[in-house]
Length: 224
Image (cartoon, rainbow, N blue to C red; front, top):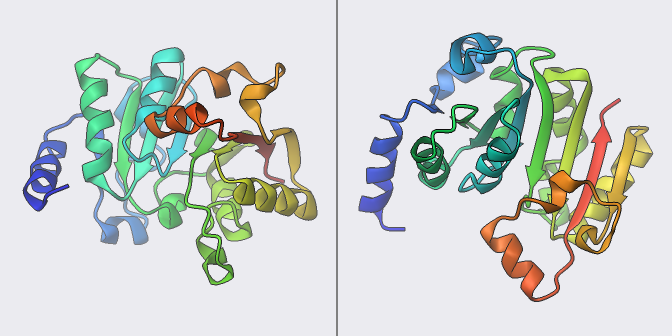
């Protein structure tokens, strides 16, 4: 993407009512205006809040919002030029139950209050396979504890990925730390018992993976 196109998207994001971009200083000092107020001030309803972390172009967030109008969805990513597409599509389609937050995933606990979030989706994250990149894996122990801080006590976690490594790493960590695994499958589209929410929405790249018979894995769990 050219720098001019990126700049255009950044500027357009500033005009979108469904995009929230706090400064880093606001985030790290716990001064995010919507923290604890996403329902009352942003969505203006009391529906469950569902996050998609590392949402990219926002395809999954928008797909979930279309399918579940009685839930509120927030796509989170640091790259605003990417989620611009999802934000624009949501506005064009009149979806009032989906928004986008520009921040780092590492700082997510500063953007939401305790027990404010009902579910978290992690879709096709970078598996960070090299050992020295372990601290950047979005399902490592530190990340899970950050998620726990903002999730309701029975809040659900979802991991959907094309990486067998990420699937195996996460499953091993969940079992090792005593978290509750509700569902796990290494080829979710080849399993008749797969949750419908997992197989009913596909990203662009996901559909390409399926065309070449690449397995898509999925884990649903609760953090203890």
